[in-house]
Image (cartoon, rainbow, N blue to C red; front, side, top):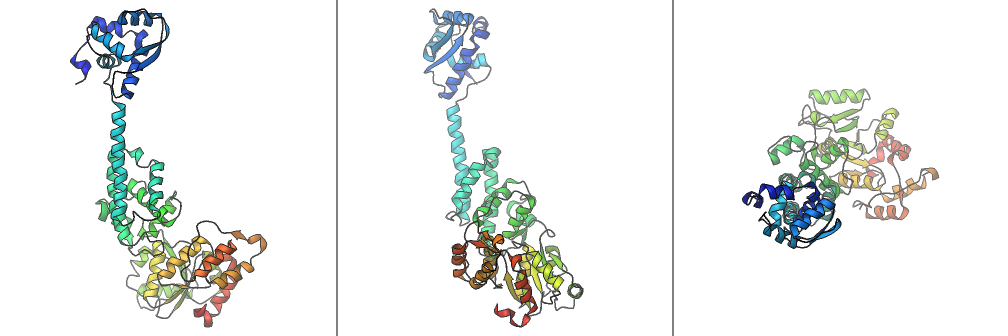
Length: 440
């Protein structure tokens, strides 16, 4: 119960003090008290007209001139206690302003303590997942602070969200999903992961705060910008080994002839006979193609980054099997690559000679794919053949090339990017000269 409720001021005195001419005094006193831990100390400066100055004179028992007036809160408190109000300043201000005073400093300290607990919870989540010492962790936490993502939600909601984030982060980290050079192994569907970790199949849907936190962590881990579009978010989930649905992400194949006698294998061979490219979805790979070998052992499959390469190969009538990953591989792309390797096929990959391109290549090679014209000599030949008006400088963060360390050094030195489509004639020549492809 407030002080004003415990010690009511006589009505006549209340009307005297509540006159509008003294309102600036009580408003200023309220602000001063709330910012000063409700301590009746210090002074306030207010402007009072003749009526206000006259009433304050009556209260303090000394003449006060109208205008800017400096009033001691201690003096005002003593005068109120001696008056018919018989109550202190805190009680009177609460009565006259219509609401209890709030210790703003204490509130701020409690809020800071609560938010400190939230940030400690974030660090604990990273620690539990074995990621707290990762190079990207400080930037991730600072980015979340600056974004206001959690503060806008409030402490109570933020506490719940961080607990959800911790559960999903731990699951993904345990599967190696945050290791940038390793292909994701988990193969979750988004709803499956959400149900498993949060008990809510929609807990990681677009717009959910736990999902936003996890994707921010993934973006920081992979050194990319926080995703802004639905497609960017789907791609980042895929990079973590999570598919938002079974039909959006695809792997583009051409001349793929599975050796089985099942209906799906017959269909793929028929499409190859017709010279048609096929978009493989997870729905298909986990449905009609479940358990089916994608290629005969020893088959050499050529993988590229840009669909224009596969398109040009199809127009040229090449007969070798091809796989296009369309940039950063979707989960369908990863599963197609793995299943080809598991079937005993040889998969060779060519991509862009830029930092994102060699980062993709590094992850594919770590999974067992082999380089296709991705050596230092290939890079030097490519930049030597570039027209002067096609020269592009490298952008982004330099990336190691574990399959050939000298390549990254050479790229840093030359500082030129070579996009895959500019090497079209060389790649098509390779695809038509099948007798020496394994060695390239």
